[in-house]
Length: 379
Image (cartoon, rainbow, N blue to C red; front, side):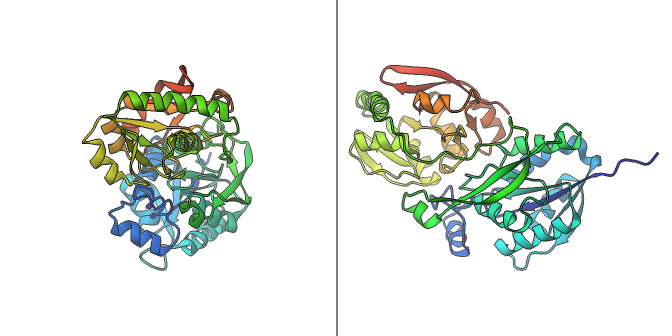
């Protein structure tokens, strides 16, 4: 009897994915943006997020062989974790580009890997879709600022668990998943212009896979007005508190009711009814939240349920710990919650210990003097 062949896992890491998030650049597309982010002190986190996924596979290390690119595109991490691996691609430059993602995907396609695991955002998904389409199964580890595509797992750990289930033969069904991306230039101007770029095939373990982000603004203005009235009343009662206003249309409506300029796709600060600053970075938030008692006003991404880790990387683990879970003011219409079909909210901060601390029931303001308890998932 021959031994079973090892699971053939292709791995591509976009080392610069999400680098613009914490410094409020709202993306990482283009070498100029990446250079600016690094100059502002941003840290490359894609490898650490991929590590969270691969650590889920350590119990199956002897059953896996990884095919990957040199250096930060995969080799460094898999070597550190002790996996059996083969380097099949060398990036053309020290700072890897989209062409490296595409060429590496092409080589992995030729190797006919069992699954292509990649870490990045919507731009990375586009690059891989351009090459492989629906020719082989893929799975995304969320590491970018923009993650509208449904090819990504809800967290890095969830991605690892899906791969582990595949290795154990628990999942055989695949489904077509949309690859979406937005115009970063318009995104920085507060406009979301999402386009459909194609489909790829992903393992259909729905507990661990995210939905396509639902676009559009809330149409139920009466409900939003009630939510805004509740939040503004709390603000008036606590003029000494700093209010960190998260991104999204529900928070935007509150800022409109306050008659304050708002960054729809960024994070702002308000105190005593006045605007402190617009579109702030993680470092600025750390400085200001250390100087005053703080409330974080946050909503969820429609259709996905993420409250952290999708387009609001300014709310870093350090910032969230400093504010404290007890000072999170989650706002959402009941319709938005119902659209989740009983799926929990998701905190994907990049810090496993913090995600675990945030898990559990949390109060969600759904109207004036109207709250519901809703769970944050534990992964």
